[in-house]
Image (tube, rainbow, N blue to C red; front, side, top):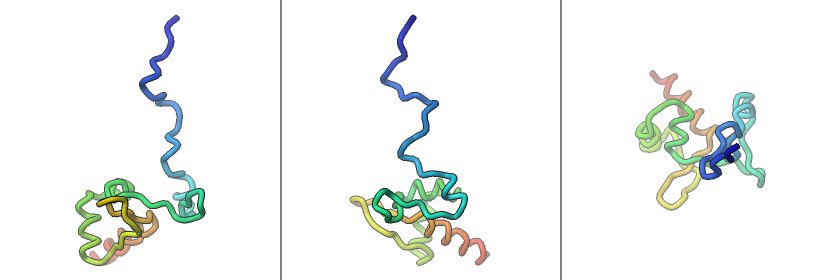
Length: 93
């Protein structure tokens, strides 16, 4: 009997760093252990709302979205702010 290779992660276990999708689906803001909203980088924010990362940068340029923080050079956003910007730009069309 062979032992499993420990170098590769087990695909059956949930990603502990991933936000709780069920809470986001209920409209509950995702909060970290400190009680503050979780901040996510632009490319992940783009993936969550289904747009290109360039669209997130354009929303910032146009003033539809404001970064909530920075990690090095990366801009960080609140997920609820990203969804609000996405709804606002859809209504404007």
